Length: 410
Ligand SMILES: Cc1ncc(COP(=O)(O)O)c(C=O)c1O
Image 1: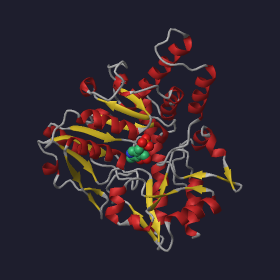
Image 2 (image 1 turned 180 degrees about the vertical axis):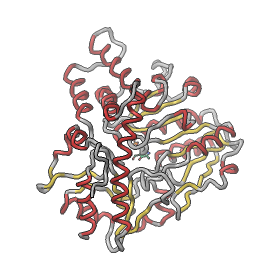
Image 3 (image 1 turned 60 degrees about the vertical axis):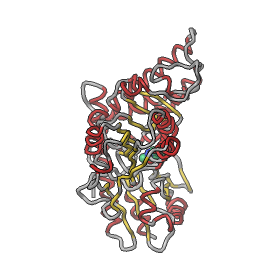
Image 4 (image 1 turned 180 degrees about the horizontal axis):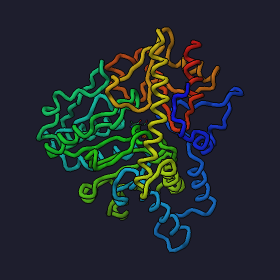
């Protein structure tokens, strides 16, 4: 049966990812670990190589390779601006999301005092929890948690008005769970944060490859993502609202620029990697239509969303019908990314992943994926965590069928 849209250009998409040519034990490798890191689109690989072959340089020079480097960084920031609907001047790059989150948390909390509160969630990746916990420890702040309902796998907002209150300085929440795929009601949380006069930091790392992101629609003050999750290189991205960025005091070298966004970009950046960000975003753009880049990006992501969603439904339906499989997913009424966490009774998750790799050339990951608070609450860590099937635009229906047959064969 044909589950995915007839118009989705799967061959054209797959041709753009050289890693799909890889064979393992003479079978074509099928990548089911998009949430751990997507494969890189060929235009990004070429841009990275081109930058290094042409002669790279540091910034602020009067010679061509230095001027070109600044131009490349500007181009990538403009692309991120359209990707997240932010001003390019609000965009900073860094080693990865985690490093940026630590730097921002440390900088913001310099002005917070004992008695102030920070809110985090039980559904989040620890990268959007621990930087805030560390800041709280350093500054004597109180941490409050938005709980996750372990049955529903959604955030429980019933006490939101108490959890976020007039002492709250910042609320940190993830747009989508990298473990179970639940998309969180960020707008509701952000509205409450706004009312309480608190800042809103949104981790969009897992959501970014799957759903269009509009910083203003989310009402986020700080938005974080990572380009290796959306077909680019290993670089973290932070978009910080201008009025907050202006006053932010990150730890930096005294003579380094104190203007934003430069002040957050400590040391020399990964210029060759940054060269790959604009092409990674152009991958979404070429999938869509519209008169502006933003419109084309959003329309491209919508097309990808439909394709991935159809494959995810196909896998969820098949796995749901298998007796020894436990699926960890929110109800049908909850929007989810194409990320399917499950366990197989009688098997350690690691063993399943090994069998899938060795016998079927299916590359898929196991563990708690740093969604440790949720994993602990579900008691799943005691048995090795989940197996996580994460889909990407380049996954085909044939691969999904192969995956289902491989699970069946267990
Ligand atoms: C939801 C989420 N947040 C944060 C991170 C951390 O991102 P980075 O590896 O760029 O530090 C990840 C990485 O898997 C993630 O999935």
